[in-house]
Image (cartoon, rainbow, N blue to C red; front, side):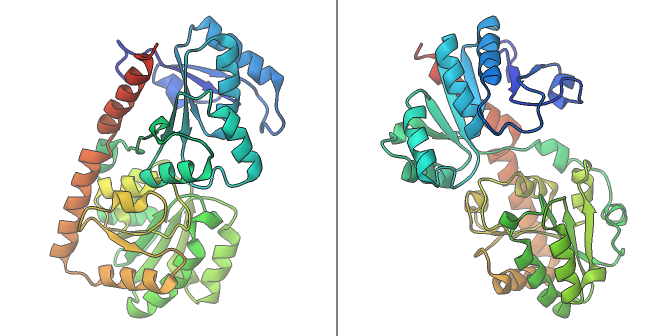
Length: 349
C-alpha cells in the first residue's frame, strides 16, 4: 500500500508476539489480541483488547478477514467509534446454516462493505444472506507476487532433483493442504489411469494435512506408491513447482486458490476443476484446462492430453496464462483495486 496515504496496522486474534512474523519483518506494526491456541468460545478480553487498540491508534477503517474476526471487529468498531468496517469473505458456503444467516442479518448492518475473492463467492454471499443489498458487496480477487514466481532461475532438472523424482519423469503436481475439499482422492484415481498411458508419470503432492495417510494407502492400492511423492510443506515452493510439467488442482470446493495463480505465473500448464472462482481465472481462451469436480475420468483425460500435447501448444498456453496473471492477478493490479475500495469507503465520512 502507498505508505503516504495509508498507515497500516495488522491485528491478529491470536498468536505469540515473540514468534517470527513476515509482516513485522517488513516494517509493519503487528499486534496480537490473545495468546491462546484456539479461540472457540467468545472472549470479552479479545473484544476489549481490540476496542483499546482501535481507540489508541485512532483507526479509521477496520478490514476484517473471515467470520470470527468480523464478529469481533464489528462489535469493537461500534464501541470504539471506528467509522468504517469491511468484511472479507474468502470462500463458498460461509452462510450455510440458519444460525450463521441470522447472525449475518444483524452483523452486516454494521458492515460498510463486504469484499469477496471472486464473483462466484459474491453470488453465494448474496444468495445465502437475507436482505443483503447487492451494492454492498464488492469483488477483490486474490493476487500473487508475480515476479517471485515468474523470475526463478532454477532449472527444471534441479527442481526435479529437489522434488526427489527421476530426471526423465513427467511430473504432475499439486500444492495445498491435504484436505477433503482438495479432491485429492479423485486426483489419485486419475493418476492411476494416467500411469498406464504414460509410464514415466510421477505425481507430487506438496503440502500437509489430515488426508495424507489415506492418500498414501490409496496410492499403494493402485500400485503407484513408488511414483507418488509427499514432500510435505515447503517454503521454497516457487522453486519446486518449476519441476512440475503439469499442475493439477482437483478441488471440490474453493474460493479463489492462490496456488493456481502462482503456478500460472511460474509458467506451468494447469488443469483445474470448475468450482468457485477457478473458472474466473481460466476463463480466457487457451490459458488452461477445466474439468468437472469429482470426476476422475475427466481429470485423467485432461492429464493425458497435456502429457502428449506438442511443445508448441504447451508453450503458447503457458505464455497466455502468464500474461493473464501479470495483467489481472498480480499484487500491483489488485493493490490498486483495494486502494480504490478504501478511498471510496472513506469518502463517505
